[in-house]
Length: 57
Image (cartoon, rainbow, N blue to C red; front, side, top):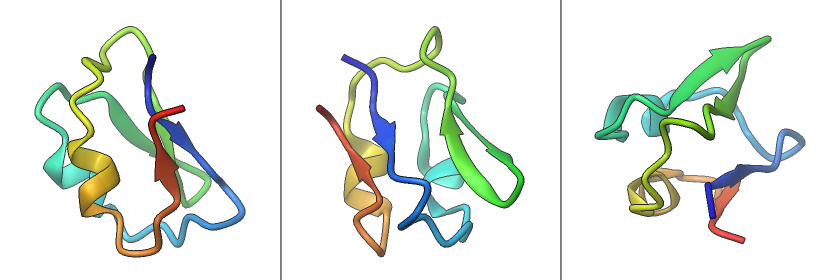
């Protein structure tokens, strides 16, 4: 299951974008969004997010 971003919590710091090994995260309107077709469910973004805005639900 692809990662999910809580847009209300996301601060737009781009830590997840920089850490994603499969280029599955991009920024839109200052918030991270997951490109589900590219996500490999590795969880790196969950660990890298400083505000815990990303989960693997």
